[in-house]
Image (cartoon, rainbow, N blue to C red):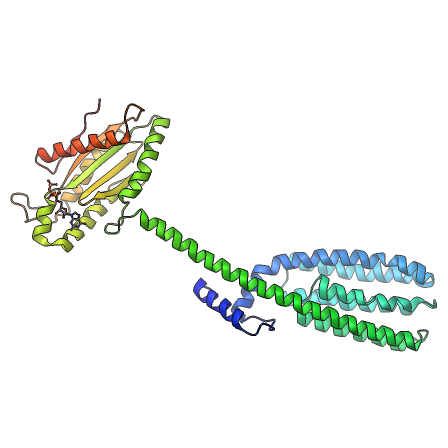
Amino acid sequence: MINDALLKAVEEELEKRPWRLKFSEEVEARFEADTQRQRSLNMVVAGLIAASIYSLFLINDYSFRPDSFLTAVQLRIGVMLPIGLTILWLVYRGVAPAIRETLMATTVVVAMMVSCLIFVTSTEPYSYLDVFSFGLILVVGNIIYPLRFSYACASSGIGVLIMLAFIVAYEPMPIEAKRLAMFSIVAKALFTLFANYRLERSERSGYLLVLKEKIRSGYYLKDNRKLSRLSVTDPLTNIANRRQFDTIFPLRWQEAIDKHNFLGLMVIDIDYFKAYNDYYGHLQGDQCLRQVAATIQANSRDTDLVVRFGGEEFVVLMPNATSQAVRQAAERIRCSIEALYIPNYGCSGQRLVTVSIGVALLCPTNRFTPDEFLAHADTALYRAKRQGRNCVCVADIE
Ligand SMILES: Nc1nc2c(ncn2[C@@H]2O[C@H](COP(=O)(O)OP(=O)(O)OP(=O)(O)O)[C@@H](O)[C@H]2O)c(=O)[nH]1
């Protein structure tokens, strides 16, 4: 889903009745996708802790009902543990959300069933006292896992019914104890379900708020990137502007000093551009500037920085250059612009748009400054202008 639509859907969810525990289809799918892995892991960890404690209740079985201790071992270790561990393994491997919740809810129901079977198989007088701890099973399902609310309701309901059925049928248990056990299990179910509901509600609303902020910060990041790109780009020609050159030039200069590489610099100026502007108008002049910029860019390497230096003047900074490569590149650019065949009837004599180019090449040392290097290329450009324009001149740098 694109972010605009998702943001709208999230904002709608936040405005809806806050007591609802289900999002719209697309937000629900996103919620599951974002939380599924962590939720499964959390449930597995909680399940392992619960399984260990459930097995430790054997100590209790030993002291309460030594007559059926073996049965308790078989039921807890031989039945409950394999079922529980298989379910946890499946959840760990990853299953669909509905299956994950169903499987984990099953552990609650099976644990309740096994616990009831353990206490009814004993004839010890205090075997039934255990039923007062059965609420712990609901605590695990509703708070420790915690199951999604609808699954928590279902597993708690079934668990309570199982326990009630066993208690009612268990004769050795006094009626007063039965009443207290029933009352306390129903109360525990209600308390833990209430807590479960609040847990899920705060998880969901927290998720929505975080998602909303994530989407928004994504927008800000995009806007910031766009702004910083715009601040170093010439809007007319879409190539680098003077600001970008002023940032990059000293860096390339220092890099060349460090690596003992040559640095090439071209200053390119359109010939008789004032006459072109006067004859064809400013808009046509802009179009001509775009064509010239695109041609310079197309004839430069990816590593070169092509800059609109100002007005009808361009600069190409060429890291790691050789004398031959710089001269060839300058000549290539000059020829390509002439080959655009852009008419310039504004000036007498010359009938096409052409450029003059001043070139400088240097292995930078601390003897020179970048500004002096630029001044050398500029001087070469003015020599090219004086020599009749539409030509390349190379600076003499001692
Ligand atoms: N259309 C347009 N023209 C521009 C822009 N920036 C500068 N110019 C024009 O570029 C022209 C530059 O003219 P000059 O500096 O006299 O140079 P020139 O006519 O090219 O003469 P030489 O450089 O000596 O060949 C001026 O007319 C400026 O108005 C721009 O963004 N768009």
